[in-house]
View 1 (cartoon, rainbow, N blue to C red):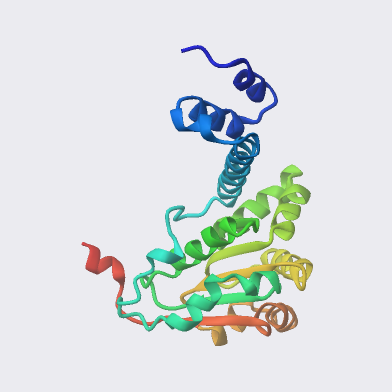
View 2: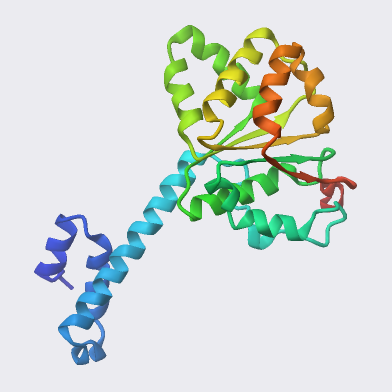
Length: 243
């Protein structure tokens, strides 16, 4: 069946949600009973929903979450990892991102730190926040290359302008001088302007030694830790139970 001229015009105007809704109404006999206002309302609602979905998909593509399918609704609170259910549900509301606070998730390998971080990142995307995920070891390597090939200003802008920056897998290797400087610049620029979520196998008390140089360590941790929520986990690896 050929498209109605109005439907074609809507697509030319990039109103795909309205065009799809128009096609649906055209195929329904009961649509004849709707008033003009009801028709228009239906088209507008579909267009708004379509645009919201596209914005969410765009935010998710930009975020590059390691576990894109992780959601806060699918969190397993029965797993033996001492996850504070009340705190996590509070964090899932996202108020801490709006307040530009930080979050630190610590615990041994395999307890789901990265998955939980990605679930919170996915929820932030749904709520309209911009998110960016990086494994910290790979990010440091990319920053080192970016200094040499001229990409550093662009990469730095991406890191500091996103609403939520997820830095996964902090430590245990001690930072180099260049890595300390880069991390200091990122943390300093984001302080009070955006949230950082850090996951680490190391307790926060060991981070000072990882940074290495006391002056840098004090400055970085002061900006990263003092206004941060903490979500400590402990327990056996969940990967073993999946095998």
